[in-house]
Length: 142
Image (tube, rainbow, N blue to C red; front, side, top):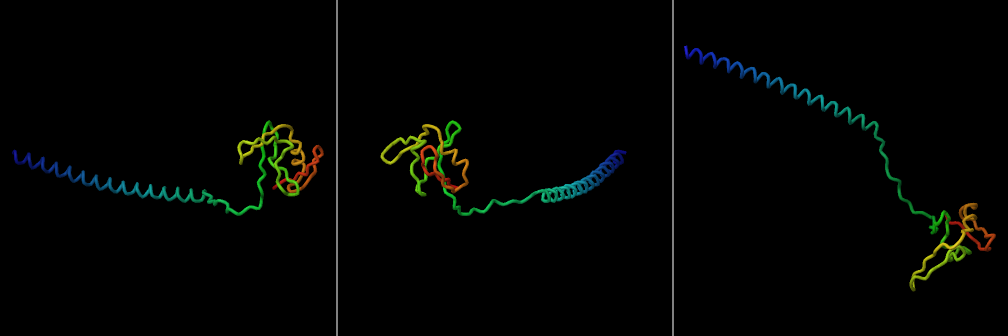
């Protein structure tokens, strides 16, 4: 009787092991199926993103022919550091006061109204105009 009981329990354990193996095989199949679904969704997302992505490039650098015009902006007014007489830059002494800081260094500070700026606003780039107040010829640089 004891042998029969052990044989019965052995049979039950073997059946349970077989069920667990079958269940493991089913779960592995389900995992593979879900993995394929995830891969499919990932591919779809990548395609959608690729369609919505607009590839751009930075603009190409080119040498410029424009010159720089240095100015001081103070209290809502613009003071050019240099005026151009005959195309030659000269320190602007009309609306700036130049301070000698050392032997090789000077700096300009705004001292009054920038009446030249009215002309700069009214003119086109590169045009030469004579100032009505100080009769200085001024030219804009573009």
